[in-house]
Image 1 (spheres, one colour):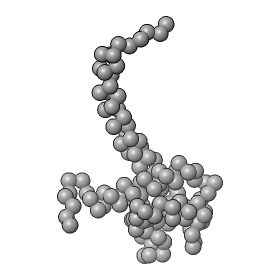
Image 2 (image 1 turned 60 degrees about the horizontal axis):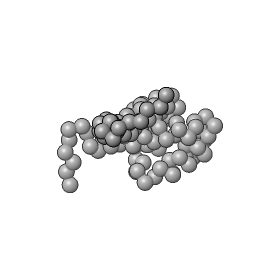
Image 3 (image 1 turned 30 degrees about the vertical axis):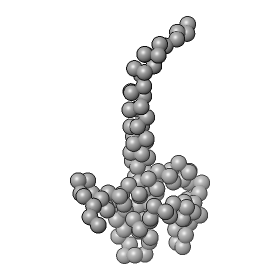
Length: 121
């Protein structure tokens, strides 16, 4: 049985919905970063180093060098390989690649702006 909500009831529900909508993307981002970290540790850390810290003496690319505007380059390199890096197309799907990107970008951000630190010019 359908019941109509009064205008007052609709406005009463609005603030919680707005709050949920503003928090939800943050939770999605945190989830993507966590999943990206697991994917990185499972597929990438062997060559690129645990927790993005390379121990290869410069023999492999350091993902922390990726700038935010290099997303397309990153996706292409992961999917198709580059130099000695094999292609991961078919092994990693688009969602996993985006989660990897989220993890790398979040890690770069935390290195350049640690929690509680005030950026200086």
